[in-house]
Length: 587
Ligand SMILES: [Fe+2]
Image (cartoon, helix red, strand yellow):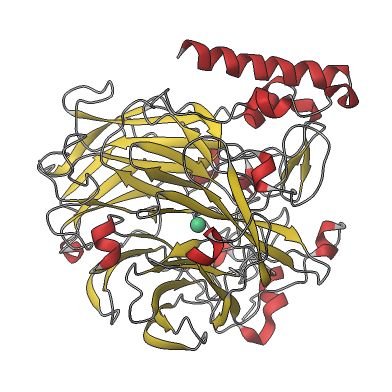
């Protein structure tokens, strides 16, 4: 599989600008097709600032970007579409801005005398007219949907309980989930916390926050051990669905400075936890889950709301995707070619085509049955998808739209290939194109497929926008997240495309993605946009409600003995706390 090194054949697996472009406001223009009148709302994105000083450059502080789907809004000219980008000015980010020299690169981002900063850079999470941004190593963070500034962390530390790792300072270290879920019936947010366990794995806890105030609750899941992460939280009406994502395993040898040798397993644990059992248990009381397994490992999964006939889950598997293997200086790629230095710090891309499956679990026994499975020799690098998140569609989903990025052998390191040995099949020598694919829910038949021809196109972060003539007004009783025909087929798929020749956004009819984009937006002067992670659609962007009680950084600071941190650190903390208090006071 591994060819001789050819120094003249430096692969270009993803756009160089994915790691070198900077985030900025842009007013996009229509360059192809006709923009429909019945696409409304905003698509929001989370992204990391690329941090060259971190071994994993994608652990940089978060940015939220927002694309307005109506021209002439949010400051754009009548024929332009506002793309707005703002660094999330969390306490962590503000402390870093004031005292960057005190932050040291570590395996999960920075460490500092202030504590472990929350980069909040992975996924946007709309909740009605509120907007949150998340990552796996911190509490969710609320931002203002209009100006994208920081509002508050979710849940006070006394509710979250003991941190993953105790540390001095004012920034607690919590392993959590980048995909908490909003419960439309119980009107709360469910997420998780992980703490280290004597077994070498991590103990899973469920965290509950009702959205009002600062109180959170936390329960350990009995025997709920994960060895990777708990990247996604999904739900049915009565059950939470948790899993050991398994695609990012801690390697203690690597953390001690050695080479990475740990590989991901062939399957992973699934835990079904009954919501009423959690809510009926006192804070801190262990709750017993129903256990099951799933294969291959999986990062993202989505349960149907209706669980009257079992817990039914669509899994986006990450076959032979090992996010622990980042690209390092001097790396050779899957075929022995030097890895483009611009990609150092990027993640190691997929080493096999990706599977998608629909699985039905019996929540009384944990027995499972795979009801549909989809995997082709071209389904490389399934990472991101678009679906209708309205409550109506979660009950009766019709279509699931997946962006397959294609095989990128130049972003697969030879170290990773060697670590997996004969557990890998052949990896194509050359890049294969990406594709946007609509799968029918239930049987996972391909309803439509649009193939890209330019492997310089890095398709990413699709979002589904329901077809709407107008966004329902507040207080009318109509769910603004639901279109006329919820499910995922009646509306639009918004697909950003990174390319070194300029960033663009393509709009597809969700019923016919195979017809290609009906309209394309592009940056005015072929500006590029750096790597984007997850996206989400929300029907409108309105300023936050200042009447909602939110956690204040200064209140958390007041619980810490700052004198123990030294005068400089204490003064910086106090300055940031005052800055945020002042900002909140004048808003
Ligand atoms: Fe994710």
